[in-house]
Image (cartoon, rainbow over all chains, first blue to last red; front, top):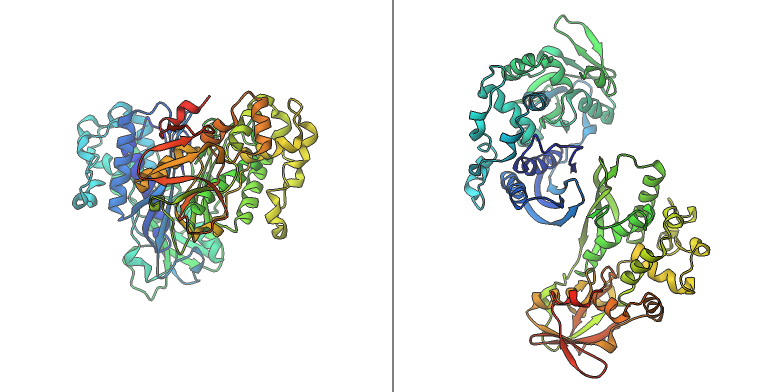
Length: 305
Length: 305
């Protein structure tokens, strides 16, 4: 469920991106159990003053994401609201082997599937650069209606055209764009190549530390992770520093990256980023000097700026 | 989807009733295809100032309805909104034989499963009697938490205790109560005994004329209905007159009765109310003097006060 003024701000995100994100975040929940999405039902309440353009862009973004994830819209409800846009999606998916949060065993390794903290860094940039006007209208090139062949690219192609309007403290568009994209139109991570090995899995939606705590609690185990192994991209590092933020903190506590966090036996060959180990109890992080510090699901708040 | 200030007004309905109604109206959609509900997913955004009592009552109403319809809550999302309560339900049901709107054949009879116009009449009364305070808190007796044995009765029992606070233009509580109930906590009509005979089916959610038009359009047929056969209860007649409203107009155009409207071959023995016949084309209503008048889905507006 995504509610205006709670989950998103229409000054920062286009309706197209919002529609895309609505599907991505729900697909991510199915991926996180090793499933593949099949059917979507959408309940959408448009603010009574919504323009036709706005609605069309929103549905184009939804349609593009549905194609991207090979998911079919089978129902729902369209309504109005007095003030705020309200978006609700139910996805139905299938899996032969469901991967729960509760399957991690002591001795398993802990993996993530990609860079962390990028979405949070993108959000911080958006807040600062106030590119309200330029982002409110998505370029028409982003719309690939009835173009199944390009569905896989429709997500990838939709932000490039606004590059000329963007610059931030001397950072290149090449550095900025992936961070904004990760926040505005995240892609869910397909679990296909990890599903066989994974003993437990969750998607990183609320931040690494809190989501890892959830997985460990469900599995009744602890975790030791290594600060130096947390995947942070060079672009994010650069952007975070120009914002005066710690890249590591963003990576540990920033939400909405929608990477997969999973555990697997050390005997399995896994093509993902090894960030720590499942231990008997306790949640700790080992810093670059080898010092081990405790963290908890609640404690993640302390990392937040 | 039910949105505050669009679909409901918390001055008229208790959170308990709202929760019950959310499930009923969605079950009604599954019943209308001859299905049985099995699973529910709920997306609920509570206004940020919502009291704990309010939330508890809302969920008690939902739980009671889920038990009533033997439906299991399997997922969803709980969120907040800045101002308005937003309720969204997705129900998954099953059927061996799905009954579509498109199966009506010329010569079939048209049936409804119960009295019409009651919900609309109840709403009109609520608007007049402004029983805001007394209806806002549901009596505790309405709550039958963890009481599966009483699930079937929990809906029935929840409005009686406020009778002492109610009176309206000399009408008895016995006359008022069913009308308020039909609006505030409607029951979906189980299609079990009609499903075998029905050739086409829809639930009366927007009003008899508009829903009959939908069924006929989908079936590419017309309809002739008989004014004198439209089922109107004595209590509704009395209440409508005291409100200065036409009972027939309420029955033809009032929404949210959640009775089933269906067609069946005249060869079938059907235990429902026979209100008209499927004809080749045109939508007409025959009045008590035998005069046949045309109506259309759009034309239903003219009946509205």
